[in-house]
View 1 (cartoon, rainbow, N blue to C red):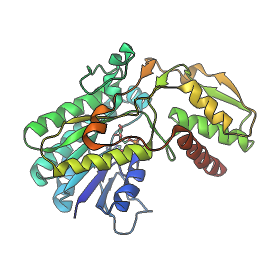
View 2 (view 1 turned 90 degrees about the vertical axis):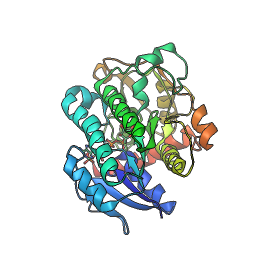
View 3 (view 1 turned 135 degrees about the vertical axis):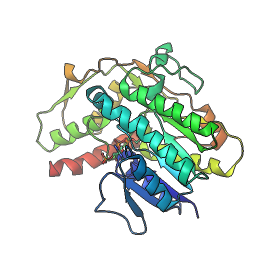
View 4 (view 1 turned 135 degrees about the horizontal axis):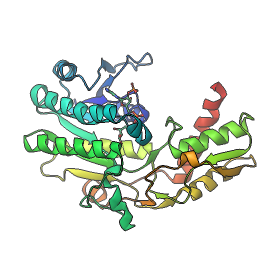
Length: 317
Ligand code: A2R
């Protein structure tokens, strides 16, 4: 039976991915920074700080996974500006600790590394959907740390470690922190509907175009990438993208149209990023051609489920 070790299992993506892995019949072990009180029956847990090399080695030695999906990271761009050392230590040194532990303790394991479309950075200024051969020109510490971690993975791949690098574009859905744009919109709409916020949305840059995916579709792609362990030759890097440009303003309009409340919109300059990219869209030909993956959930449906989630969450706020 395939045994998947999931790092970052307590995060936004990790929780969705755990459900999908269990539904697909995998044995799953979760690595989290703190014990998870709501842990699932049959799921083994490891408390692990990936910045600790001996803890990584001990975890891999004990669990001996056949597959690893490495999600653990500082994933938030503004946090990476505020705390670059934490970001580099977690995203780069943490990945190196994991890679060294794989090489030493689970050398046959197949690893999927969750990098990010942010690695393309300035290359998005070309204004076209970027494929995996596009230059990587990171524009923030988070993106730079993910690209450095990719280089570490490439090195270990050359030394015999097996696996792939995924570059997911913006993924959204239930459970995401309101630090991210669509979750912020959904939270504010839910607060307005419940009378906890005046009917004015605070927004940042609405003109940017992004490639939005439902987190469930991204997790489905991770599951399909695991299947590459069964085959022979395969590419090392995969965009996970829809290929479709969506203006943030259109997303906001769609969400407001899904609410019965009368809502106006106000620009909050504090929500503007210092290095915002106007257009960030991915070419998804490779993953479609190699694995047959494509997004299956419409944006409208994703936004509806996001709003439904926040209508429940704001009750407790
Ligand atoms: O903050 P916690 O305790 O929930 O743990 C976070 C975990 N994490 C770590 N795990 C082990 N050792 C560390 N030193 C460490 N620092 C952070 O990574 C959290 O459970 C997880 C990241 O979850 P999120 O911030 O919700 O990220 P998300 O959206 O699930 O993204 C997953 C991956 C990230 O690597 C992104 O950069 C990539 O997908 O695109």
